[in-house]
Image (tube, rainbow over all chains, first blue to last red; front, side):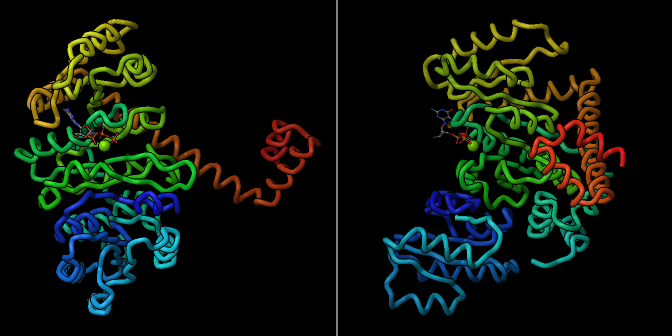
Length: 113
Length: 313
Ligand SMILES: Nc1nc2c(ncn2[C@@H]2O[C@H](COP(=O)(O)OP(=O)(O)OP(=O)(O)O)[C@@H](O)[C@H]2O)c(=O)[nH]1
Ligand SMILES: [Mg+2]
């Protein structure tokens, strides 16, 4: 995923797996990222996305796009989007589509992941 | 965030990290307001201890930076890391992965980590890096660690912002150690053999010592060779001590002033060149320059004659 975004000309900050919401948001803040992309397989999406969105609001990062992908039941997606989460890509979504989505959402190039 | 750079400045100086992050983007990308911000901040610079960490890919630089950061934070209120990674020459994008090694410190209030891609900076990477370091220096970061992959000339230029440059090698580089020699060894103030838990550390240290005896020394400073295991933290204290010793020597011997003067010269000359070119272009008009270029391309005149003609007008 990170590689696909790089190949689409973006600068991707890769922070590794198992980050807490606090760590993710602090990284995006210090890096002045335009986008936070979260890849989840753990099933904790109903906690992680809203918590990250909440922290982003607290820190005034209203102009930063939060989106994600991974194993997330379709039934949960509307709930997440109510919290301000953007698109949720299912496993196997085309990397081109994801890169296109990010590029259209933000003109600038820095992405935290 | 659409906040005027002057507001950002006030908030960043008060310790607001989001404002600091935005301000760094403004100066990194040379956005409107960058020059004014740097003007205001410049008188506040010159206090930070700037340490460059360079060396071949995968040598453990980020892991070592993580260790150094931990040690410096014990004595310094604010520490910053600027980690530069190469951009893809094909897409212009980049994967910036140095942070992974520092994840245990993401929530340290006194630490600011900033990643940077190497390409696409107006005025060059070295200038963008030096602007970033200047901002962090002015904002009260007492130690700024600059990590860059030491493979090419451009990276070498980058670490010139540092007061002390550490070159990180690993055992078993073999012939690659010869490659390091060309250009990079000369700028190293401290030599580090990291991954000293692996076989061959002694040979590598010996090879480095040997290489140091070749060629005329530029100054009286003899670069020490420090063995570290960044993975466990072994050798961190010795490395910190070696950096401190170099810093003291540089201050006393006049080396620090000489470097600062060289950096100031490079900066002023760069800006002068940019500004002269811009003024000249404005005066001549792009159209006239284009016409001259077209004539050179058609072989109607040679490039020297074209420049002579443009400058005469
Ligand atoms: N055995 C051993 N492995 C180490 C040591 N220090 C770092 N490593 C490992 O070396 C690998 C690369 O470490 P990094 O710190 O990312 O190296 P780097 O020089 O920053 O890499 P780039 O930024 O990609 O050039 C990681 O897998 C580390 O765990 C060490 O002292 N001993
Ligand atoms: Mg690194």
